[in-house]
Amino acid sequence: MFERLFDKASTVIHHKLAPYAVERERYLVHYEKEGYTRGHLKQIAGILLPVVYELKDCPDLKAGEEQIQAATQRAARMQSEYSKAGNVQNFREMFEREAKRWLRFLGRFQEPSPEPLPFADLLVDFAAWMERERGLAVSTIELRCRCTEQFLFWFAKKQRPISSIRLTDVDSFLTSCHTKGWSRVTVKIQANAIRSFLRHAALRGWCSSTIAEAIHGPRIYTDEDIPSGPSWDEVKRLLSGLETDRAADIRDRAIILLCAVYGFRAFEVSRLRLEDIDWEHDQISVPRPKQRRSQLYPRAPEVGQAIIRYLKEVRPKCAYREIFMTLLAPVRPVARKNIYAVVANRMNRLGIKSLPHQGPHALRHACATHLLAEGHSLKEIGDHLGHGSSRSTRIYAKVDLQALRKVADFDLGGVL
Image (tube, rainbow, N blue to C red):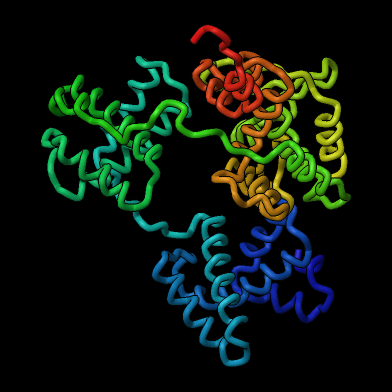
């Protein structure tokens, strides 16, 4: 491996004679398979030399956070003698990162003991109950568990048993959430999750049965917010700006088309797999977790062409079945949060900064508003967006200004 990375024989010998050469070489081979470039691998190999010299006295290379920090300090002091301050900081960050990654790869990094989750057994029981007895979607279970976990961490600091929970505790927690700057909608979601947990806790006899029904989050008025998204002209400008030969533009254009044409959510795009596109029948299948089914869409020609170009010219060869991959090594499926970043960054570059949301959901709103302007009914729009209930779609009636103006201009004649 070292012979392929370095041209000078003296450099190859230096790397081979340093301690733990076999372990370092195995690590480099692993990342070569992950798609790292030769230049990046040389950089990693270079930083591993001071790492291995600083950690060589650790028995069997077993080290924890404390040993890594001490080694980083020693190596940085030596580096500072002949480097600029900015270079030393970069060296420190890379030294610590690669030391931990290498030891984790070898199975020798002594991970710090995680903070024990308070009432962990109750949370597991709550999740199982939601799945088996309530039949809730995985996404809903994850959300409620995450919200409940935050409350239980907060309550555990009081060092009181779960049976002593009072309504004032819940009120204090929700007030603290509001103080942190959480939106009313987020606090409402938190309150709903806690209420669901305490209902379950009451059924199990863990706490009083009177608390849950008394929990009230902030009042959220039905359809109080008008959906906000870029205009369709802005969407077209967004797409036209991506008609280049750059790998990032080719991939991002396919992602944005899926969000704008079909109104796909970020997690739906990130989970889209190669087998979800039926090229023979011109269809795209998208799983709908809440409806426990997959929804079929006709494959729009422009969307199909964008995906084909991405698959042929940009997508790296790998064993993953997800369609969209990271552009830089290590090659991984693009995560949900990265789909958001792709869309938000592209909208920012275009100068669309006045919207409260700039990710895929903004394009979902743009899709719905465009369909409404084209004369589609709310039922058709709801079906297109995968809404399980008409209540989720009716908010778009508020943005149909032409229809509202017709109502306002209606001549009542002699009725009054």
